[in-house]
Length: 333
Image 1 (cartoon, rainbow, N blue to C red):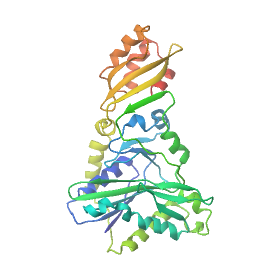
Image 2: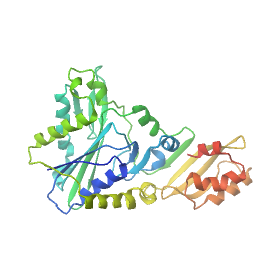
Image 3: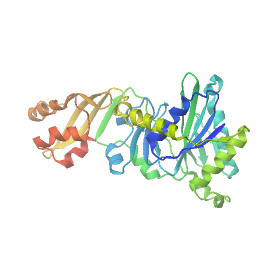
Image 4: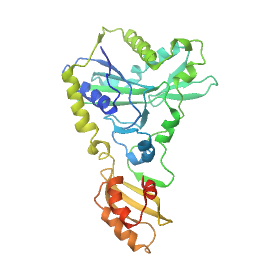
């Protein structure tokens, strides 16, 4: 098994790194990968971005929006959230029962005097000192012809307030589509519970936690270990994949299914409901004022947005000249 700690905190690099390793020509190679990301929201492969995030909040906090190759729900990452990936040769039995890869993580948490268990959705739950169960890990899986990835998050000391705000859809918007919806759960940080135990002094930082967890997992599986460092050529290939795929509009937005969005907006101190049909995630297919035939001026100008990308720069070109103000545009996201 090859142990790899990512040299980067750039979320698009690390998502590309996982895919790169899954396509590794050394088909018998197994990887245990750990990485941490700068603040980012990571959607599942088939999710609708508009149903999973508060766009204005992400932008105001410089939080990246990204999409991974596996299914499942949306998760929030920051530098105090540890991500793990098992990348292994394809094994249909293990794919069907990949909780077995989570067992060493649960056993490791138990060595820290924590009460943890695997949940029904192949997630990990922790019991706090009041006996309440809270989620600390969500997992997802990806397979190709030769290999599979089982990966997940570990909330060590994540900013839970930012997490909650990032995934809370604004109250002035309704979104409907056929996408997979995230299942929200009550969460807790490992460190919060750890600090109340007798062993809290042994785990002071996420780096320390990461190191101990990696060592425990390797001992648990009792396999020869090689610490792998990416070569310059590998880094270049991964950066290329990150740039061409993971940062692209087609991947981040274009994979979102067709959706219908109703937004309550303000124009010249009057409130309107705007109905928007989006295709390919953010291409305006239809748009108009809902349930009224009175404001032809607004309706007529909104038609200029058809076939445009739903982003602030495009909206400004049409809406500011007809009387919208910058503050009004905040309600469009």
